[in-house]
Structure formats: structure tokens, C-alpha cells
Length: 279
Image 1 (cartoon, rainbow, N blue to C red):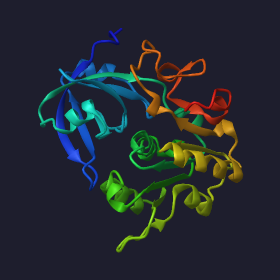
Image 2 (image 1 turned 90 degrees about the horizontal axis):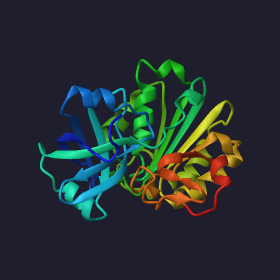
Image 3 (image 1 turned 135 degrees about the vertical axis):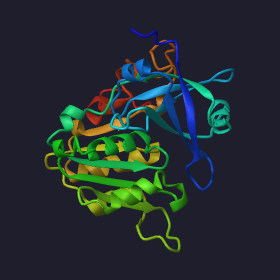
């Protein structure tokens, strides 16, 4: 069993500016040896700690899918010392990766069900992993209808624009993109994610809803899902923003009696209803 304190060395092969404001970069990291790749078994929803040697480490949701072998992707907003250092790294440099950490979206429970994936802003990373996993030819037949509702303040802040364009061409996914205010040339919807979710009105029959985004978006989306008939045990949320050390040692991610890094970050709404409203 690998020591959870020791990061794997991985090479940064791509440092891509993801958004027009340049505050979010997407990093592609490649494994340096086959054994590390084989041992890094993960599912959508899990996260990892990225280390910039000499600067520090920070936790991020894994944006790549296990159906994309050989590398990992992370989309990182520049908000502090570690993330600023990450943004400035040249391609080719070696980083440290600890993981995979936390639990995943309940893939086995999703099988045979319809899925409604709802995301906002740069919190679309692990949702990108989930959608990519489902759309893979080896897995698509395991799941029912797939509806994706994704919004940002403006078109320039949407992540994975090329992939969104490809998803929009497929017949096996209903993709709804929205921005907060209308701008010239925009062909998607206009409005906040909760309101657009209510307009789209995805059916709750035989369905799960997966929600990840800014706290204010989640706050107003949950009542919409409940109004549409989604029971709390079929509303899946991620408390990724609570992550700290990743292995339950620092004690800074607890909500009530739960350690988000060990018991989460993925929880059902029913589970969170039993915890203090501290998230």
C-alpha cells in the first residue's frame, strides 16, 4: 500500500489558459512510470492534492475521467499562493500528486438511471469527469437519459468549450448552457442556473441529480429539484470546497461528526440533512 503522505511525481505536459479572464488554467499531468499509473485507480468525484515543491500543496477535484488513461487533468482557479505558483509553472516541470482521495459519485447506483448533471462556474471539474465517463462508448449503455445544465456569468468563463461544442452535437446527451446576462452572439439560454433548471424541468422519474457549483447556486437549485420531485437520497452534492489535507489528519474539513475528506466529498442531500448546516 502506497504511503498516503508521499506524492507521486508527475510531469506537467500542458498548462492551458481555460477562461478569458485567465484566472482558471487546466493542467494535464502525465505519469512518469507505468506502476504509478496502474496504482492510481479513481472514479469521477474524487480529488487529489497537487504539490508545487518548495511552495506547498492544495486539494483539487480530478477533472479527467478514468476512461482517459495515462494522464490526469485539473482545472485550477488562481486564488492563493499555491494556485498562483501552479499558474506560473512551465510545461515539462515535475509536480507531486497525492491521491486519489475521498469517495466518488455512486456510479453503480447510477446505472440504469437517468442523470441530471447541474454545474456552475469553475465547479464543473468533477462533473466533466462524470459526463466524460458516461459518454464513453464502453459505459454509455449502462445509463439512461443524460441531461447537463451548465452556467457561468458570461461565455468566456465557461470551461471546456471545445468539449461542450462536441457534446452539443451528440444525440445521447441533452446539453443546456446558460449565462447570467445576454451578450451579442450568444446562442444558449440566459438566466441563472436554478431558474434554467426550473425551465428545463428534467423529470425526476428513475433519475438522480448531481449538483456542483458555488454555494449560492446550490442553495437556490436544491428547492427547484425538490419541487421537481427529486427525493433527498437522489440529490448528489460535493463538498469539495471543504477539502484540506485529504486524509483526515488536520481536522479542518469536518462538518458535524463527518470528515469531508474521508466520508466525502460526495454526499446525498439526505446525508447532509442530518449534519449541521456548516457547509
